[in-house]
Image 1 (spheres, rainbow, N blue to C red):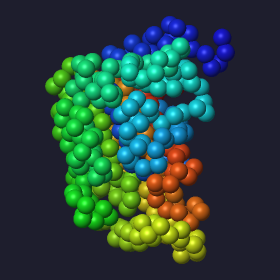
Image 2: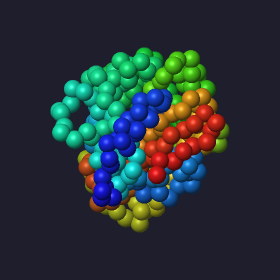
Image 3: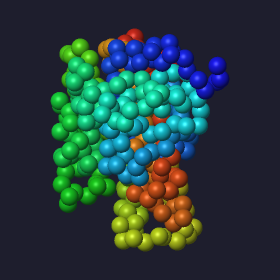
Length: 313
């Protein structure tokens, strides 16, 4: 048997393992792969190895539509002997999807999206969002319970100061309380700290200079301009990139609290929905299908109620 092959017993064991656990899915908004690789993130490292994946969308709406449609960012570089392998390629898929001669997922769900599928399988579905795509509309309506912590309305400055308590992962106890009283649960969290202007979301004073830089570059991008990559622009981009790394390290500490609070064995998936350009070819932000935007980090593991995380090899 080759290094890239999984036998039937392994496939069946992986599916059984996934089906009898709770599931938690966390999307790190706008986080690019190389920034994740540079960050000190001990809780994510303990969860599982950092994997380079390719997003199916260059901004929040299409990437999450793909994720809820059963397609996590695609990992193709390294084979894994687990329920997320080169053979399987998907943790779960929808029964209404096109049939395949060879199973390509560990868990088959029946519904128009995985949230509905988990609900039909007896899971309580709880979600929380932090960017405005989750403030109303389609995504919140998928869940039994959905909470939103983020800017409201089209006229709200998306780069306005957001402090402690303004992000979904600041409300770990509330979210875990929603799922702990049920037999099985699917928990989704959209973490907005890593979205521009890359807020730490702590009690520390907000970095107004980072806010100013992000707002300035957003104005250039929204005007359709490709900004010349001058010395000043390089300094701006270095500052924004560093701010995103610091924001991820803050998220990692919050994820540690989430992991500690979960009370049942849980399959945990943490991934970015898309990445971010930091001056490459004169671009900043996302919405353009550049390698820096489409390449995203992913971690997968099984969390046990003792707090001990089992990394998926």
